[in-house]
Length: 259
Image 1 (cartoon, helix red, strand yellow):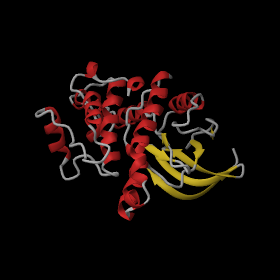
Image 2 (image 1 turned 180 degrees about the vertical axis):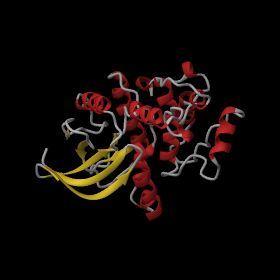
Image 3 (image 1 turned 30 degrees about the horizontal axis):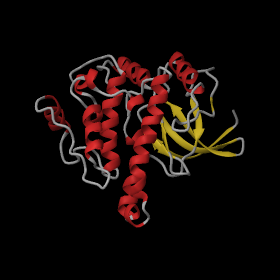
């Protein structure tokens, strides 16, 4: 692939993301860390290239898996960035109230659920669903990204000799925090409910003033969930939906097909 790399636009657990050009179009290029095993890279490409949905990030192409890497993915460049950052920026500028964008919050939640329903239907679990892993395209529609990388994270933990961890603490289901080492669809549904809290609060982190240890304690000991922000969308029906998605019992959580 003839890819021209430009400025760095992101740094993550799996590697760095650059803005660039490919075949005359502006793209994002994610270079994976050099320790990424070849078979995991090939598996990721094999999964991603078969996914086509308006609410799931497209894969344009990837590097050949010859040599020693680093290997890379090429996908659409989203100038509006991550959903959490986008919402926070709107809130800071007052755009949500002035321009009626707040009316899109339910649509964002619906689009994320649509993308996740498709992924689960294709047998793909996300493992780290949150607003930081949803991109906003030029038409202000949501595209779920960074899915299916739980195997890469597990391999990195294995190489480093640390315990595997799926997801990010504040979005982790209780059973995951307790040490479950198997990712399930119900864990994604729980994370989705926390992602909805981010959306309703215009990009604020859940429990923004609490330490990770305190968050872990209230989830496991007190079985607390984040406060649902009071917006004009916070109806009893929406509250009931979120409560079903983050239920303590995984079997009681709704599948994405019913959200």
